[in-house]
Amino acid sequence: MPALKVSIVTNAKEDTARYTDGIFPAGCEVLLQTEQELYEQIGDIDILIPGHISVGKDLIERAAKLKLIHCGTGYNNVDLDAASQRGAYVAVTPNVAAQSVAELVFASILTLAKKIHTFDATMKSGGWKSTDFIDVPELKGKTMGIIGYGNIGKAAARIARGFQMKLLAHDPNIKVDESDVKQVGLDQLLRDSDFITLHVLLNADTKHMMSEKQLGMMKPKAILVNASRGPVVDETALIAALKQRKIGGACLDVFEKEPLAKDSELRKLDNILLTPHIAYCANEALAGRYQFFADNCKLVANGSAPKMAVNADKVKR
Image (tube, rainbow, N blue to C red):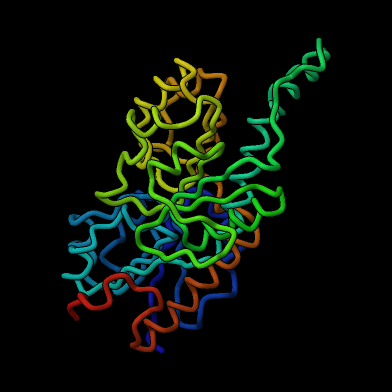
């Protein structure tokens, strides 16, 4: 097996090492690099695991040895055409984080809808409830609308069943064949759902798919959850809807620009729950993620195409 240099871009080298030590095939030299270190050494890198950094044409053209760019669920941060021209596969990682993401969706919904964060802050500041009328819903019997019914959407549906929720799904690319999931158009899902969770890839069709018009279709107490990609939601429109109490609330794990600006209006709202792009970060999900990376590195080292390569038919080698 030829020697390959594998760059994993991370600012948490010690933690990353816990998941990567010993799992990559012999002959792979695994480098845990900051973004700046990658830029300085890109000419020597065979396989790039970029995390959330942008992998544009300029960087790819400097990567003379590049054979594979390995992403997580999405690849919107990679110039796919430039990678194909360079002869580098772009691969994604299927399913390993589906349960982790779906669990965070419901943890966020419960925290916001049940006002757990508010009551926790009250207790820790020495307070107590002033009334039993706290105006929170049960999930049982409510409608969960799932936009994007791939692996993560299906994982969210499985959890929703445990709460005895009704299920709607919208996905123009997938035929839903589960008897308890009603496949509907986007407008109907927005109108009829009490909770809406987004699980779509970011592309020209999904950018700002949740904007002023779509937010205006939602129920006044409905909660929107985005754990897919930030630009799927028009943050300016969302901030306006939340300030005007046009919807019940929102839970965001991803943002149009990351990291989220310290002075973002989102940080100032009381009807939103924010987490810093960590939905995929459960221990089991991370272990599965790096194992999939390692298995694909072995395939590439042996001259084979990696699994889940989105540009396998376009790579010029």
